[in-house]
Length: 230
Image (cartoon, rainbow, N blue to C red; front, side, top):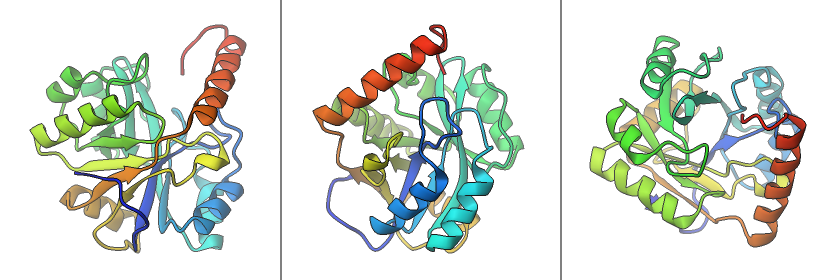
C-alpha cells in the first residue's frame, strides 16, 4: 500500500546512509537531530554492506528520543537488498535468494530495495522469484515509475511494504517513510509491525536540484573507487 498524504502520528524512515557508507558523509548525530526535528518516531540506518555505524546511531537516537532500527543495505549479485533486525553484515555478492537466507539466519527480515532502479535495483522478476519479506514501495530517490512497479509487485505477491528517503544528505532525511499503524517502542516491535502489513509507504520524491547533487557526488565517488560499484 502506498500513501502520499502529509504527516502521521508514527513515521519511520527505513533507508538512511551515514558516513559509514562510501557514498555519504552524514554523521549519526546529525541524522538523529534531523530525524527528531522532522517528526520521525523511528529510523533505520542502512549503510552499504556495513553495520559499523550502529553503535553511534543507536546512541544518537537514544539522545534524541527516536527509535533506532538496526539495518543494512546489502549488495547481492542481482541488486541491493535492505535487511532489518541484523547486527552483523551479511556476505555481499551472493544471489538474492542466498542473501535472503543469510539475513534470515541472522534473525532479520529482507526487503527488496528500490526495484527496477538502473544498476542497483532488483528486477521485478527477481523479486517475484526470491522469498522476500517485504518490498520497498516508496524510495524518495527513485523514479515514480519504479516506485509504481514496486507497489504493483508488492500487491501481486501480497507482501508488506517498506519506505524510506534513501538519504545520503541531510536535506533528504524523512522525504520517504513508512507510515506505521502504531508507534513502536522497540526495534523488534517495529519489525513485527512491518510484517503485519497494515502500513503505508509514502513521501515526497527529491527535486531536480537534489537529484543533480546526488548524481554529481555519486559520479565523483565512483571515479575515486576506480569505477567499482557499491
